[in-house]
Amino acid sequence: MTKQELLDFLKFNSNKLRYYTVYLNKKVLEQFAIGYYQDLSANRFIVYEVTERQQLYEKASFEREKDAIEELYEIVKFRCRIKSIPIQLEVSEIDAIGTSDTDLELLLIDGNLWLPDTEEEHLLKLQEKLNNYIYFLESKQYVERYGDSFDKKVIHITFQYSPSDNGLAFLAAVQKTLQNTDMSLKVEVPE
Picture 1: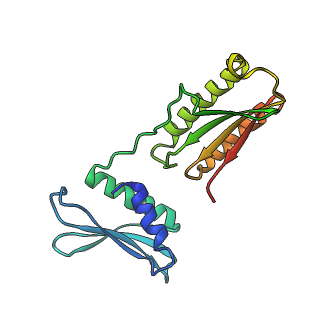
Picture 2: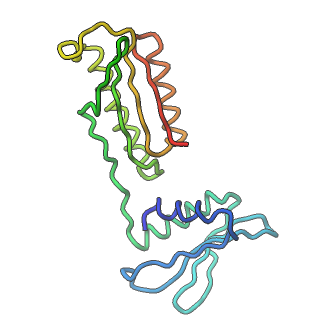
Picture 3: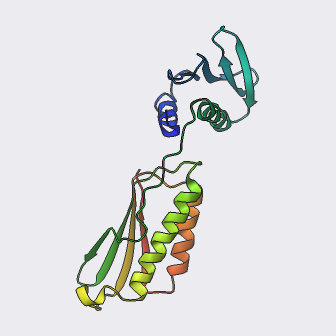
């Protein structure tokens, strides 16, 4: 189970009773169940574990559901040795180039999930790729093939998954940096 599978499951079932249990695969030597539930009387989210002897242990208690989910994932990750999905972003390539009468547009496609475990790597690779796009435009590497009669040069980023808060802050900083240039950033995120 990846973290995204866990998050997708929780999101899909978010309108149902908040009592979730995760049964782990056979690679784990012992059988156990973990989960969390909302204690309405205490207004807290309780992360629990049931051992193979059917003993229930409360592992932790949180005010925010997000914290309970994070703790649940940490337990699953430790028990199953879940590995983070590597960020797939070819930093040295321009994904696509398009032109109109007045504009040159470079397309950057990001199909990676925004997970806490890989956010730093994701931001670093995205920054490196954007830097290469900016260098491509500043050094006018496009002139031989497309000419140099463009009013605007647009870096159009399309995300398959919505960026994290840090990702959005990074993109806002890039847009601000490009304000006084002939380049602009166009960001497309899923609804």
